[in-house]
Amino acid sequence: MVTPGERRRTDARPRAFEEVLARIEERIAADGLTVGDRLPGERQLAEQLGVGRSSVREALRVLETLGVVASQAGRGPDAGAVLTSRPGDALTDLLRLHLGLATLSMREVIDTRLMIEQWAAAHAASVRAASVRAATGRMAEAIAAMDAARDPAGFVEHDIAFHLALAEAAGNRLIVAVMRALRDAVRRYAVDAVVRLGDTGGLQDDHRRIHQAIEDGDAGAATAAVAEHLARAYPESGRDS
Amino acid sequence: MVTPGERRRTDARPRAFEEVLARIEERIAADGLTVGDRLPGERQLAEQLGVGRSSVREALRVLETLGVVASQAGRGPDAGAVLTSRPGDALTDLLRLHLGLATLSMREVIDTRLMIEQWAAAHAASVRAASVRAATGRMAEAIAAMDAARDPAGFVEHDIAFHLALAEAAGNRLIVAVMRALRDAVRRYAVDAVVRLGDTGGLQDDHRRIHQAIEDGDAGAATAAVAEHLARAYPESGRDS
DNA sequence: AGACCAAATATGGTCAGACCATACATCCTG
DNA sequence: CAGGATGTATGGTCTGACCATATTTGGTCT
Image (cartoon, rainbow over all chains, first blue to last red; front, side, top):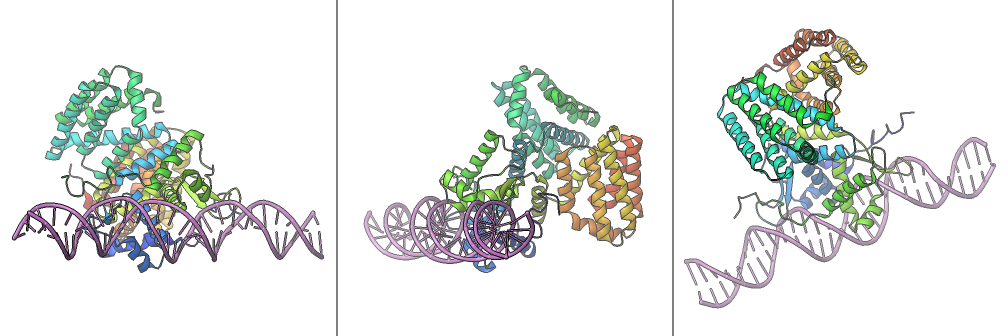
């Protein structure tokens, strides 16, 4: 006797759409398909793999959810299922749904954000590449836009841009995608936090210190500034260490 | 005229399954549904929402992909679509597919892993909770199991357990899920790395140093040991800083 | 020749219905 | 009361039809 609920979908015969998924993934690897390439049409795939069209569609829906394909009706080179690369959307949906289910807590999300931003700030401060300078430029623009923002929602919009630029400065697309997903998933909470704080002056001071520390190449100061910034924005989710 | 390819699925009428997704998400929030609760059957949902059953099935497939529901045929309290919480599987699929598409590079994945493990090691070393002691205990068991491993695949299996325990020591489920996904997605590369190294003695020395540093509560030593460990395992993906 | 409009066509989107597989629920029998 | 036969609710899958969209094709007028 196994633990109740532990038997779910184990030792089961693979479903048709799972077989389709595996075949498509094989095909991507074998044929060296990459972003922009097209998959066969749904009807053609169904015939090739010996399954119904609905099973093919379920598989394509999964791939679309994972940000691997995008479908477009009509005719011509852009129609059909095309390989894409949108890992961020999938991450955003994932976080939003699991936050809704209370699978993940705000504190876990905030801590993860702290980890990423500290890492990004330290790396940005240590590197002097053109890409980093471009990112710090976007950070400065976002600070100015936040000064000009009229309402909390507008402020948060540019705040997201600022922190995203920070992540981009480190030059790691995976981390940027995670960062974007984190911010999108908690956008509502961020607006609440701004409303609760009332004054955004302290947050802006933090932003300027982070930006300055990166331009100065002072990784330690950048890390510390990020930590203080998140502590100010989310005081209730204090660390236990 | 927009940029080619920029028009994909914008300003489009939402598809039926997207409407279903939105309604289900609303319902989860409104009814306060949580893990273990059941959704209505596919036929019933289709009728309630005024769509075909296939559209409901596509929506459920998306939710299943995101690790939010699990479906089970049959009858009784465990049958049907049940809310679950498996964010890890979704992350694993996401990383594996995007690595296959060359959307993400190994270096980005390794760097992300370094970030997570350093953070986890530092936190584990700073906290003296029962949960941390349990995790360090699992780390010790994994080290012993790696000593006893007969082939690279077996070694990597316990290596994954070791690094997962390290992430668990920090007590953040989101970070654990990301860590698990990273390791699962690059399992094949890890085996190759072990084969290439030939001798696993160096890796085991690193493991013991990480474990010891955490038990000693020395966050700095733990962080440094993790960095050296990953540098040894993946020398080719050296940082540019 | 060129511009423009209409029909054909390829592709995804959706639905309805049928049937199968699974696993619990129910009832009947000994 | 135990145990098996039957019923039934549920997901899994296929087929076929039709709609919506957008390009391609070809014809027609200027």
